[in-house]
Image 1 (cartoon, rainbow, N blue to C red):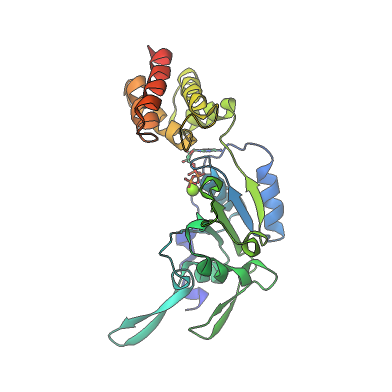
Image 2 (image 1 turned 180 degrees about the vertical axis):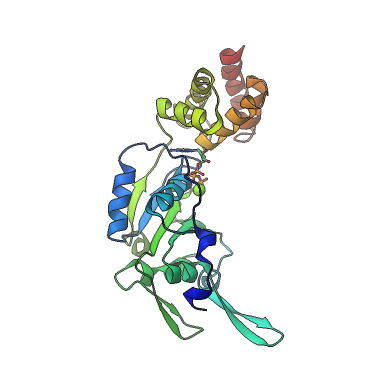
Length: 271
Ligand SMILES: Nc1ncnc2c1ncn2[C@@H]1O[C@H](COP(=O)(O)OP(=O)(O)OP(=O)(O)O)[C@@H](O)[C@H]1O
Ligand SMILES: [Mg+2]
């Protein structure tokens, strides 16, 4: 397959995504992109990592190819494979190969989920070589100048079993994200859903209550994503307390005591 046969358009981010910066990350990403340095985005679930990358792809006007990683993924899923067909075999590029060929930003989401022998196939693309050997096909793909590699990972998942090798980590620059501070988070809820500012601020308070102090028996706090869900339900006419129970409390815990504590906080705010 040559780049002429790949429909690059399908990977274009068409509409400007709404992204609320938390600091100077946009300028820093632009700097990394200018030198095509690989980027890693770290941070808890639902804090804006994917949205940021989408926004950067749109800003830079580059196609974006996202791959959701999982433990069953093999190197062939990334690179490509021969398919058996009636008339013989046909090579099909994997998403990583396509990204290198068309010069896309290739975003490997939750890369720790992938096995280490899978992750190493990205190495030659992330250092000065910027090439991808297709061993089975006997081809060496040279990445187009626009190609850039991005990975995400959620540090809380990290354990000895699930971590990236140092030799992988040290091929990336990194951004560490966290949930936005309350003022910004309320602004995000209002912008995303059209919810009025006062209610958005109340939702953020519940998010804060579940995040601070950290722990409380919860593995993860309430993410910005879940707050957006709650805001969406309220905007659609669902009573605030019901929306909060459904979007903020029930998904994150099965522990009766924690539920009760959070439910009380909700009733206190919306009674
Ligand atoms: N800075 C932000 N600007 C705009 N929207 C945001 C921002 N942060 C979070 N959001 C909202 O939160 C939702 C979840 O964000 P996103 O999908 O980027 O999370 P993530 O960090 O990639 O999570 P995961 O690790 O679970 O994939 C977005 O769809 C968006 O509505
Ligand atoms: Mg994501």
